[in-house]
Image (tube, rainbow, N blue to C red; front, side, top):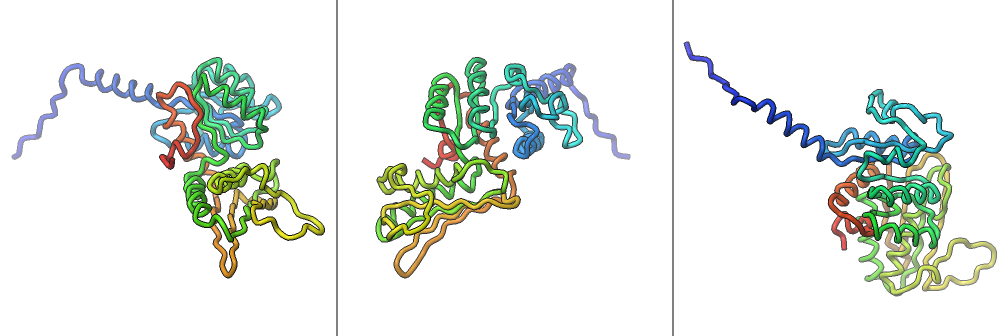
Length: 293
């Protein structure tokens, strides 16, 4: 009869394994989510829970939210031990980075506390004014921030393609940016559409503020060949479609990105969280995160 193999465990190895497991747990990215009870907040919390290297450590929402005081992961049938809170400072106290897809006023209020506490930020909020953007830039002198109108990896690859296309189609092509979103979206054009316009304008050596056309009605006259047009459509539950049309004589080129789920924004946000690890200050975007410079 074959002798059973011995599995001798060195003394103290169980303690070493436990210490290693504890260290690994401590090394997880400690992430807080703003707008925790909203659609994007839920998607972010689910993505954090499914990741192997991130841990939910804070959940923020407005005082009127019915989720205040509830476990942030209750919608998943899971207890995270993190209550949804309207107290920004308490909600960020145990976190290393905040992911924020709320509204400009709320994001800036969160960012002021992040700056005080040394908490980094991933900002997907859109609709900032120039003055509000300047406040974000000022915060980046003290904390590390990734700010992008769209965290989707696919969208940011699309932006790179648009940069290349605009450079090659610098003359003889009319440019239109068409975006479609759900009925609940409060700003137009979308931040992603504006970012597409900025990328194209920069590639063409134009100032988007001078060449953007946001509406047409009545007798508009012939199209200005240097114009970059925008069209916004709102309806239903469309997550987000963006198409840039380069219309030439005898041909047209369309570059399109369609989002079927907000999960792509959540996964891109977690890539931004990982990118910020070890960075103390600076303002970055998804081109930095994805190495698309």
